Image (tube, rainbow, N blue to C red; front, side, top):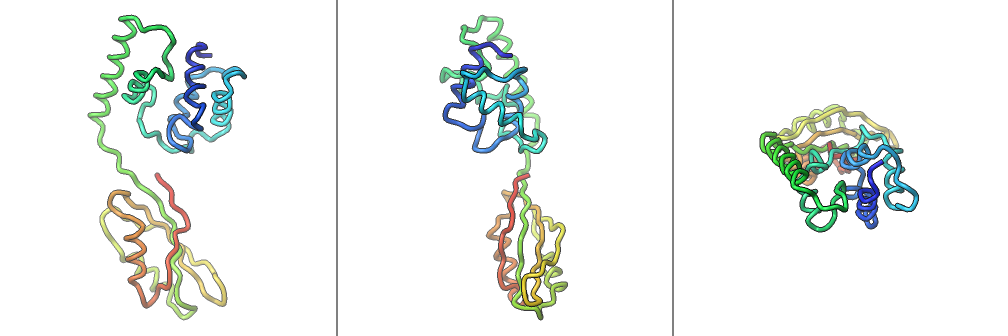
Length: 207
């Protein structure tokens, strides 16, 4: 178990937050969780609530953190300057500890500088609905897949019955976030005006 000062700092951080960063659990929570051998004591209410919640999750399924290494990030150093260090002690750092920390941060910055930028992607599931049961759905899917642009890859598709013999095309697409937006997809699909009556976004997930 980490020392009492460390746990107290974590408890303070989580007093008005549900997670280490952002509004959903991420790999940042996993990194911090793994730093604790045991659950926080009961009087650290917020830390204990967070610990039990993260323990129950599937860690491998959680999305990436905003920072590659939360424990070594520059933001953590800035937080320390605001009198909060998630893993610091209440005691003043001596010269050797300060030197080691500086070396660690320098190594992190070098790693970040050498690492190529991560391309942010999303998967989107779309419902493409025809006007009626006379629409050629095979042709409709063909026309949908002919929509091509940089950063867009069409995936699996299926026809799903709606009513009165009408079927809709449900299709998945993977996009690069900074190149292809949902407005572009909807506009392009609605331009297939002889076949497409409407388009709905069924699911949107960041990769």
